[in-house]
Length: 444
Image (cartoon, rainbow, N blue to C red; front, side, top):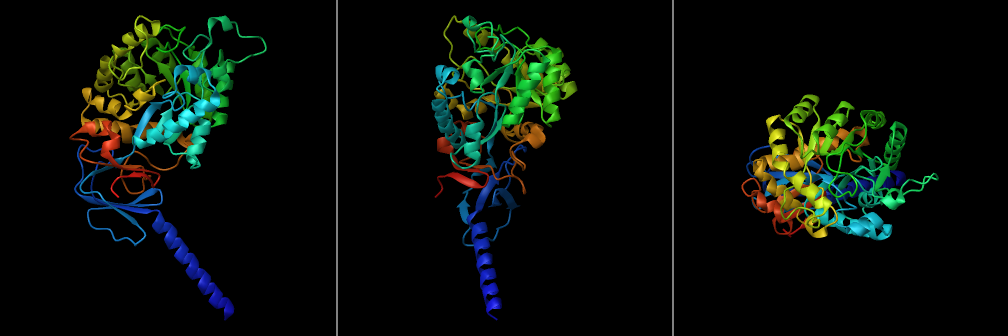
């Protein structure tokens, strides 16, 4: 009899505990209009129930919940997926160039941790990180030590000697026979590799560290000092080595490239994503469309959102040339129906990084507002999914639908009618949720 009584008490306690746990992780959004991540308009007033880290129920009718469920009256506001930045640098975006490329490493991690929280509070719940030693910051976010977005890390950008990721000065050449590494290599910001064997080794090192995709520099860059923007970097054979190593791990290679020759060489080797591409031509665009290659493009214009370089400097001249191609690149992407992602690629400027949402809003120069929002949610989520089993997170992102991960924003107004709402997240994002957890709630 005592055993039965104790069993009944224990069963009741466990049942109560279970219900409390479920209730504590339940949130009901009432009276919201939904942008589902793909549509051209908002839904009728709806209710959305989140349980744990997933969207459990979406209904136009009332949803009955327990007393422990947190209820948020959306007051007719817009519920939409969390934003995704497909080209981000958590370790480099807000750090001054001398710190980003010269350390000290501890200070750089602290800056990145602060910027991780800022990024999340701008409504960006996921980022694809395309160069930088971000693994420790990502681990701290995933373990709940600090606040920040989900991160798909590439680790070090792999570069040939004299390429976009070679941050050495000329007085550091040639590389010592003992294999002495530059600071940027030691901390994992860059990896210099020449020849297929070295490329394979560096790719495998990034995958060992936890890279969800691998990035190589395929052409000249704006911020780098010794590579003209028109040069092509790496041979087709070297790219094939990187692609083979990545595909053996079930993931893909993306490349930094602006010019047709650099892009076409990478595509012939099996590269699946081109990051930048501002100087593409029609022939290259046709190849990308035919081969189903992604274009991860940034809205670089010579405006307030451009990284500042001294007038007359080589970097400034390269920057002007690159930005002059942006309108053409977007026109070609649209004409040939290339799968196009959006990202910011902000470097070395904390104030500029605060304009992350504003840089998304300016995309109405080329796309309708609903198309812009879809690109930064469901489309970018498709790009993240290319990592396959190397993705650090399981579940569907970029949409508001039953069973999807609960990365959600409650927006004060209709961002399809007024996309400028996302340019001021502090004022206009009433609720920011990631993985079912509320990080901001101004509705209380």
